[in-house]
Length: 92
Image: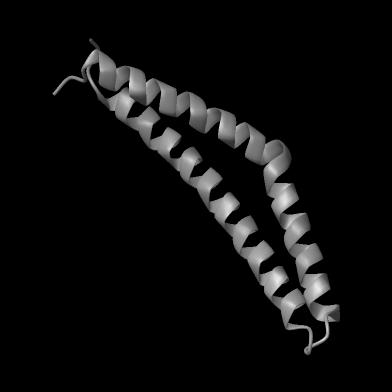
């Protein structure tokens, strides 16, 4: 079944967003995530077991970093799947 012009435009936009996200991820974000996780791990190793507030803060930061990473990877995957759909669909 051919795509409607609106569906094609939506998929094209998703491909663009996915490509931009992939470029950003490769050029900056992946290293940022890796560096922040390493820094948080070092902070965790040195924090006192009695300092629950700092431990919870480190945990929250890890969750935020993981969520950010996951969201960006999801955008990349959506763009990749949109590109496949466009390639497999008949033209207008």
